[in-house]
Image 1 (tube, helix red, strand yellow):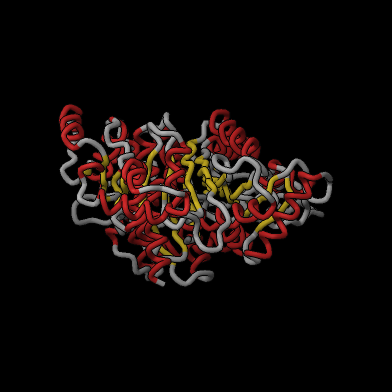
Image 2: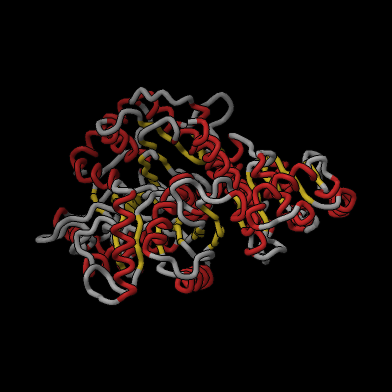
Length: 589
């Protein structure tokens, strides 16, 4: 994933176009291929180019085609937002950004230039875009005719607004400052918090949780031509500690925002369309989701159920399911073959052919057999049926992958500013130490399939060596086994949840541990803890819980909550399709 920095201002005429050349020059010395991207530009008129993009591209000899350096104009963005289509705007920006991200090592994102009439609108818009991209921000504010105290208040206000959206501010720059050098130094010191920004006697923290670096510049002019670029670069070089800023940019990770996560899943699913079977074809939510999935090209859909009833209901709902394959199990040409296959697979359990036919009359069993036989690539069920009914057929004859001891589950927890992985929260009540190790390694593998960072925390009621008892000993043993199986995997345990996710707590409870405070994959010791925790986070933090996503099976089968919304079903089908892609690609190796 490319390094990214999003430059935005707190008000008009702050000079972001004068800061951008300095940042680009700095990063050109650190990465091979940088690019510039402005999510939203002011309309430069017909046959004209955005001035900032043109200047940066020309001066630094950037190879990005102009059409790929922005997503839309400010007027277009305003129209979409006023029409209640903010999601469409962010989708447009994500599509343009991710196209660059796959080609470049660093993307300098420059926010709007505040030439519109509504400063509050633009500032909020830039904050929302930075949050969607998961990008750290360089906040620019004017110091013209402001005291150090007034500038401090302006910076703090910007930090508070950004924090409310889950946006991290890597650095703040004060342009056109009229304060004295003494006041400037005092201003910088006010944001140098011990242990975070390198205050005297403390080890600097340059990561996501560090306080912002603050730089004060005087008499900065926004460049309008090539000589202006050089003037801006000279001024930037005199007032900015480029090495410190460069380290901060490189240390600031790009978080996977919930919008980015869902966008990537859909985009990945479209690249190689998989055949996903939905056994509950008579359910309205399933039919609505199928319509969306087919129209968006996310997957090829197979619906199981009464053919005439599904067709009639689709017409009643105004849905277009012409591209769906609709199969009525007991009238399918494959019915007898499926029954015979099931009888052969289960004859050691005394299953007769007649019993096998009865099983295949059940849509979930029939759909699972489609996956087993390679007539479908994955299955999603559970909007009507129980988890047990969804999973049982898969356990009977799809079974676990070689080297995996159990089937387990994860939830992708989409928080305000990041996506975390929780496992196992749906399947295994009391896993053994070996099974916990299996869940940890498998959960990390599943997370990687979906482009998430993987730092694993083996959770317990104590951290490190602070606690004793059978439950803690089991997590200690699970941690040892997981490390043996995947020595390259960043993993720690036993650790409490607060020490796993909060850097300040980690420095107290697990000092020096590379995972503590930065965990992204959380493995719970039992189902009681995991299920209650995911629901608590879901409700208390307003998180979107995507799952359960089943893992460890030879072919992907996923369960829905019986309260699943249409959006939940769409997400789960897309996730199943991506899992199916991974399985197919693994088989081809």
